Length: 307
Image (cartoon, rainbow, N blue to C red; front, side, top):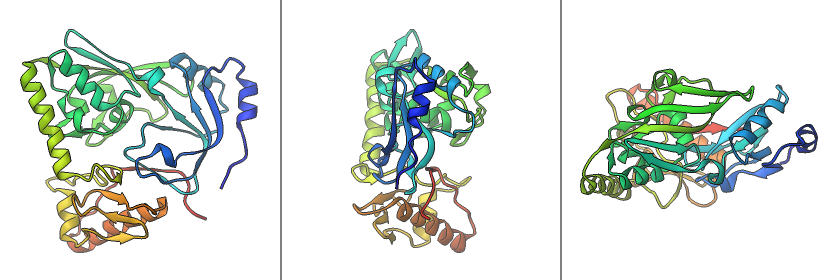
């Protein structure tokens, strides 16, 4: 399907725009699942000032959605109306370490932030090495792995609001909870600063190797997947609940519950966004029936479904 082209009017109202604004752009190639419909308009700002300029001139009635590398995302088959904003590594992907602080743009890969910290003998950020996303996503969902979370190391986050104004949020102002943040959802994160602790380089590298080895052994990292599908309920492991409910290997269309790790859904090659989301809801229903526990999605689902 395609949406009416809104980019011509937007460009006319924004003569100073420097980034790319394109109509009806497929989003499937931008997600790890490789599924989903188009963005009505896809905007890639050149830098923070360009993003602010765009937002100040964007009509208030147009919805805005932000995507990163699409590693924890299902885009529904009907696509996304309004504007999808994607920060590029060129304008938002820099990382730098000074003293015990690591600075990173929101489009920087979590893995690169861990590597930047390690290169400066800073410990505490090794867990980012095992998270296949960007810092923007990590801020929004308090991403974590291997016993650590974003909230444990964040100093402050910077973002641009829908009004085009810059916001600087402290760790406390981010209102972190498990796999989420209470920060204003209209703020688009552009950068962040993290604090590490000086440690022996060999110990840091050993920890990063441990994180990577765990991923390779326990997760289907070479499949078309979206990472952990459901949040772990308090005191429980989602994958164990899914396995106990008999869902290992369960299929809906071209979507399958991973045989390697039950909390991962995979696109076997022909899945639609509808297949993957339906499989996830089927898993939730079976777990609820089996043990009475309701699983909550960790993967973000955006867009409109099939008619």
